[in-house]
Length: 77
Image (cartoon, rainbow, N blue to C red; front, side, top):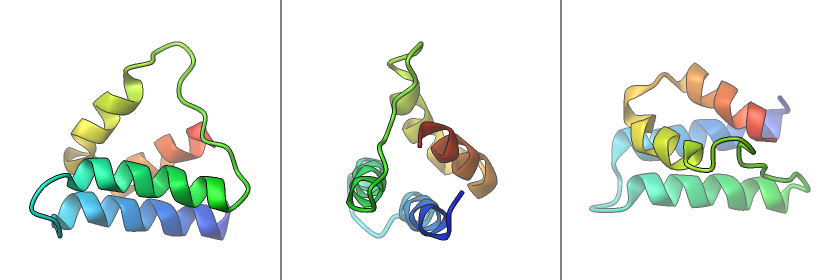
């Protein structure tokens, strides 16, 4: 995983964990992740076998470790 990818994972994970917004922290973190990936010339690839995986991981993001979240994002790039 590149340094830029590591930065986006860290920023997104902290958006979910720290709850800086009154509502929508997980949705904002996901959109920020995809936007950062696309702006840096990479492509976000949802899981081909499980279309609901992204929703499930983002919903559970507050309860998983940063390393697990980083691994999941790395699999999507």
